[in-house]
Image 1: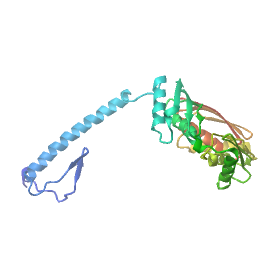
Image 2 (image 1 turned 90 degrees about the horizontal axis):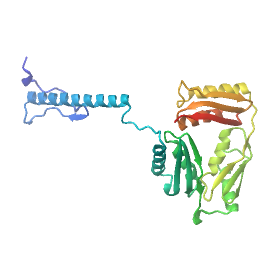
Image 3 (image 1 turned 180 degrees about the vertical axis):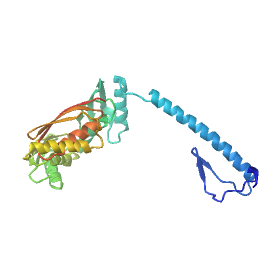
Image 4 (image 1 turned 30 degrees about the horizontal axis):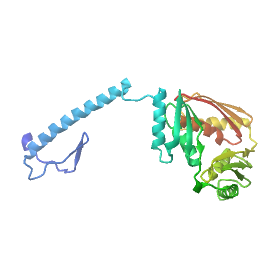
Length: 288
């Protein structure tokens, strides 16, 4: 058997990766012999593994000590984070939006150019850690090109409702000064929400008032069971969640604590999806 210096080139000439670095096999014509080449590669490999192990240990120590993570705990941190999120969101023009934060209660003041921007600004704010409540005081100020009179906006809104397959028959819209009011009856909240979504992107819209009623007869026991099962299935709600469901007739009250707005919306959404629910009272506390 030969010495390491006489070791033959491995049969497999595939490309190897060590600690994130590309290592190529020895090739004929190299300035090193096959044995020298493999020894050199072995030294490089061991050095890079040692360096990478050091980096991993540093990262683990950093995580355990809590360093390197930014906690959204102060008024300035949360306000700046909300401002950054609004600027980052391509669906929001933040030029005329002013953010005020008091202990996680965030108020949005100023103006935007459309109703979808009004909604998206609130959604962007809710994505920021530490935000417990959002008070959307933004005003939609339409450009001259986007203005629609009452008759035009009413026609456009009713056409949008008629052409949307998720909106049941019988829902009507009326417009006044850019504000659309929806009326009628549906069996589920999802249909009520679909009607609002159908008109939400219309040009000339300043606001939507949803006066659609939900009419459905259901056994309160079934409602309670369905909501609890939906909460148990949700990937966003942890197993140790203390969210409680109280059912009275067709009304549901949610109490307890959630960590984020995403978790909050998952709980409220699950409650609304149950058959027979006509009202959801949201008493959840967002811990941030």
